[in-house]
Image 1: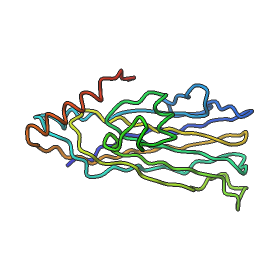
Image 2: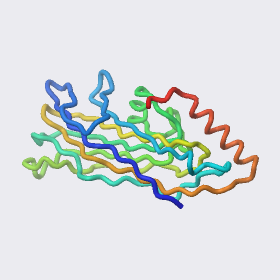
Image 3: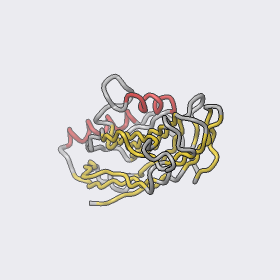
Length: 207
């Protein structure tokens, strides 16, 4: 059993006239063209754990967040959506936008079994305390499967979507955590899982 961690840093976005630009960041953040959506990506390299033709079984997945998002000024209607994803296939910018709307429900670009972990959260300005810049959660849902995989990578994404008035929106660092164990499977099951993992990864990586 092994515990793996990856971190994605903070991002600050300034909205002027309803249009956002990245004004402060820890690094690696990109804006999705034509939208107030921002994403960062990394991956877990599992090649060392999947040696000897073993399947990776996940026993746990989670995120640890340094702080909730903030908006300054704290205007009614300000909203931030934070989507944290760990998946067995790479996702394009277009797919990330679609996943931010439909998550991994049927009809979207991401299936339940491909989704090791997903957490979708919405934060709003605290209308009872508008002097405070800290935003409060109004929706929090986990949609992951922890399905085993023969893939040697787990792709990690954080997607931030912002709606609201002009001002500065800050989102703080996050740590992604995976606990996994490599085990042998019957040969046929392993080969079919390996085939599926190979098919999913036949996409251009953006390392």
